[in-house]
Length: 357
Image (tube, rainbow, N blue to C red):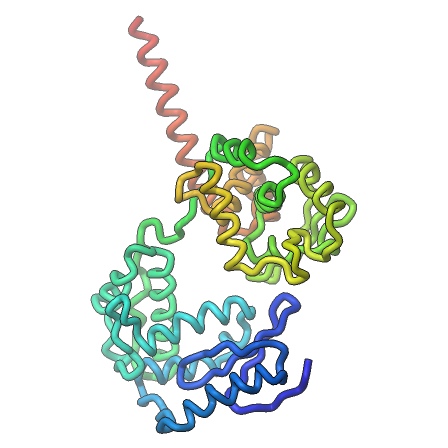
């Protein structure tokens, strides 16, 4: 990679790939690769010239939301985020500062953070009610900025504390066994769709970790990977269902990444989401079947199998957490609890009906 020292140039390395951006005044513009190439410099110079013709951006007002954003971006908590998490945070912080015309959100850069209250936060969140996960992400960012404001002495409380999340805010659920079977019926073992599905279902990992897996992460029938979001190292033997799909697939290509696409870089998160969504639609699955839902499916399956094998409840959940992580185990535990209660209720109803005969 060429060494280039240019104002407002941001270089991000993620999963072995290097991305360059022109970042200025709350906006981020992608630059073409390779860094320092003629096309890179032409794009950089065009964007830079456009900003230079404008008046230089003023510093945010003291005590404003924009002030808290700037302070947060200099904080150790922000610096300690993974590149993927920082990218997500930046997207929503920029949205809050600059507004969202499509949703009717005004720019909040100059908003006095001391006057931010829960009714206002609820109104902002309600603009994204159709996408609960995004709505909750925005609330989380406002909560973070309120914590910054408390540290700076701009306010004494955080109006987000103690508030309930939106229902469905997680946006995912475990797949039913009939849905798992429907996907397998549609996509044979030798298809890339099936390999991706089995890898996600049987490893219980997040989308970013699945597409980043390389041959070095899968050796001698075992998976060992460091999770992008948590930094935790997880290890597990590959299940028979995964080996039956993955081993023949790896024998047919020589790429380093497991989910080969014909390009050395493999899938991006965006392209993988589109790929797997198309496969789910083709299999006739409902829209609330999601890739992330396979994590909960994996957690639920592990738990139920451990219980069936005679493990105590808490011990069974320890097995789940060892593979997927604590948060996913909690979500799957809630789901399994609902299924158990429903099963008990119907069994008792049947017993009552039979007693009448």
